[in-house]
Length: 272
Image (cartoon, rainbow, N blue to C red; front, side, top):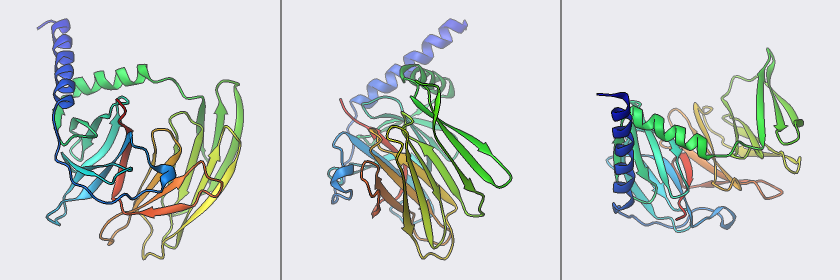
């Protein structure tokens, strides 16, 4: 088979997956709203890893509507990573065995995707997205980690900070446009949340009290599609389920509010 024929068949496969998912209907389960009004969007979904209904050790993927609380189980076992492909809720999901599936965040269907098709979809996503205005550069030192936030439009450093090295888990993330940079240092008593706004140059700090037996061994920082809010999920050994907090990044206080969600893997747009 010629290379051109193989490449053409791969793209035809991708197109067929997208078309199939666009017209499949999901099984809807409803519940109560869970987010504060400032972080509710009718055109987004939270993708969470939730324990199986049987109460075993396995997990599955669930899509949660932050505006209505509607929950849709999606046919992906042991999800580990999500990659939003467009603004309509088309998402790639990777499971614990590093297999990929293509889903829409408002449907229950999931279709397996070969690696070659994943490569094509990832490439298309990178070409379609504009590069962020702000970028965070990381530099490790013997005492800790330093970050510099650079405004690419002006080629200047707008924010610079450093964090001392500690034994507990820490995580950092930037919003898609790079405006918000967040660093979280986990602890069993309380976790510190540091928020940096590259546009306003504002710096804020918040604390999440835990009073837990152990510090977290897994953490995710997930921005909402418009980067106005942040979901922070932590998982601890011995706890029955993960803990999740939502932070309104546009508020002056930036208080973290605990919500009844499982481990957040993605927060994706679903506008048509």
